[in-house]
Length: 286
Length: 336
Image (cartoon, rainbow over all chains, first blue to last red; front, side, top):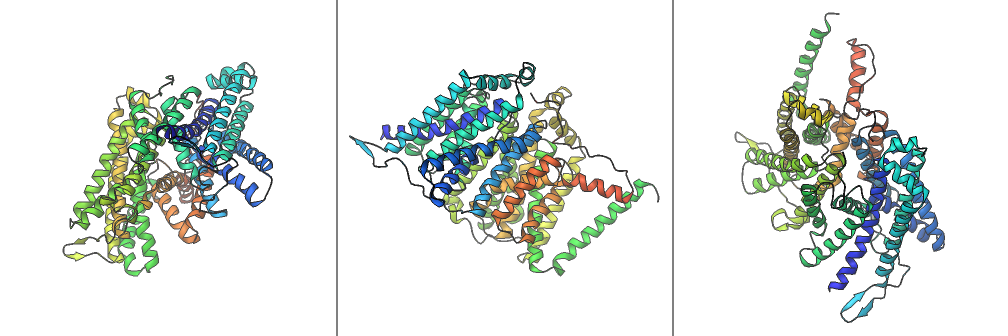
């Protein structure tokens, strides 16, 4: 039982970690919280269903178009909603991205469906057995690919010029501007990167979760909890928080209560906020 | 034309008397459908006033408004179903909601803005889960049925037409307290806190007191709104108190004009009546409201009330046109 739960927990943890990482990147680059992060996964999940199941495109083309669409969506949000609100109170952006999320969910209901859609897996779902341990190879694939994606993004941030520019504007936008970094362009790159990550995440989780308009609500919430628990201004904090939340709720659901699965992360969140509001790995900033 | 000020006073009292008369006569002449809409608007108006106090005046984001409403609604429903009088149950529901609001104010002492938005969303999710799962008390997904309506002095106010007066009286009472509140030193402290917490603390505003109270008062309003809703619909289930309901209150406040006295009236009116007039399904109007919300934030962050207010003043000749100064969503020099 325990190894199975562990794989399951790591799997949801990896997805939370990826979404949380996107949160942190957006926060660092633009001091913007994207409350529509969950919907940034939900919409591409519908995208891949649209391209592959409805328009009958081959799988690579469907994935390519989905990821491109996801990146384009990030750019549109940055350009037309975040940019005009940047100089306002942060509350305005918080409310605006909540508005984007509300729009996205209801857009799907109005123009597509409120029912869950089943999207078949590309990997074998025939479980692997080893003594009492039963693991789906699909889960392991997704876990591996998401972890790889996280590593690649980490390398991009640490070892490329683009990544350095992102780190620079995260630390001090004015100084970054003075040393010749194009802040608006770097911000756009961060939104594109977030779109890329969420697009790939969407393709991978579409077969695991049912594709439904409300897919993003709990994903977005958990990703945010993860980021806050781990530390909002640290990528490693987001990763730690993501895996912690994933494992916690999987074991909590198994041993404490299934009905309260969504509550475990919240309890930890409130504990962290009361004891160390900047998060476990976070650095206090004012 | 006489002096602007006395003119204005005459107009205000005239409007008040005309308003009260209209409210008194309305249920006697209105059809069933307008009556239903008026009842619903009255209920949401109370909740929207509450959020305007918390968010508009005190600057604290709360996305747990549906949860506070649920606490008021379930408390009232459970008590009245057990035979307790509505007039005891409703204040208890509002107080209990206010108590939870007070508690939720404590995280607000530690965190701000986006963190607070998430903590309150989390609280809303938690309350929803409890309502859904603790079915022995809350009835679970089937909810609670046959919630009785109140009576007064032996007269049962069971019909929609009569229950209207309960809603109207409660709304008037809460609006009167709201009016008193926004003119008191409390509102000044709330505004100071909203504009700059550090500065407010330096001049002696106790953040601990005012933040928790901003939440508590807003939540108590939501609780009363929920209590009235339970008896209006006579049936409640958890789906009435999902997150989208909290967003709906947020839209009412932002569209109406956060931090403006009449903001909730305009906001609650638009958000309740527009979908009915458009005959749109919930998904269609939520989508449209989301667009409206974003457009308002970008192009008219102060909300509709100041825009209408200015237009009215200019038309009545009280004031010359001048640009509006957005209060809550005002420009900052730099956020970095």
